Image (cartoon, rainbow, N blue to C red; front, side, top):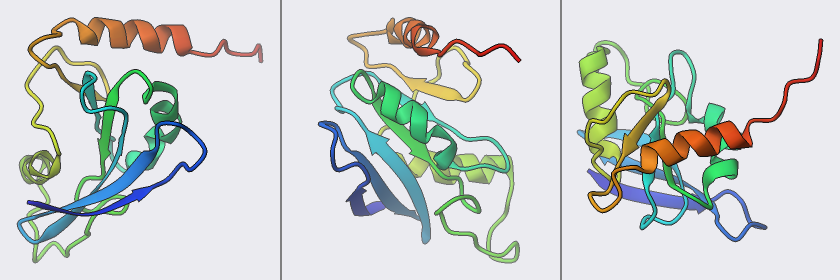
Length: 144
């Protein structure tokens, strides 16, 4: 794995969001990264058929309080999209490539749909605080 690019995407905020890439087994994996790496890390994994772009507003909301990483799986978003003859498109292979391309290595914690947390040993309760932050930041829905 090797990181080879970093482009800030927000020029007016104190905490920029960076577009980065990593090369894993010859495949380029794109990911968005924001926030201070010393803060609790949340890895935002997109579903199918979407990309890290779906998290752009959430990243802006949470990047002051968390270190956020949102990768694009191989074949999605700005990551490489090799042909099926050159890449085994399986959940295991996509997970392996995406996992190796991350700047942090997540460890298993309780599942939250769409979010894979990475908890520093010094702060194991950050997932509960992340849930509270998300609930507090939800905007009320307007009546139909």
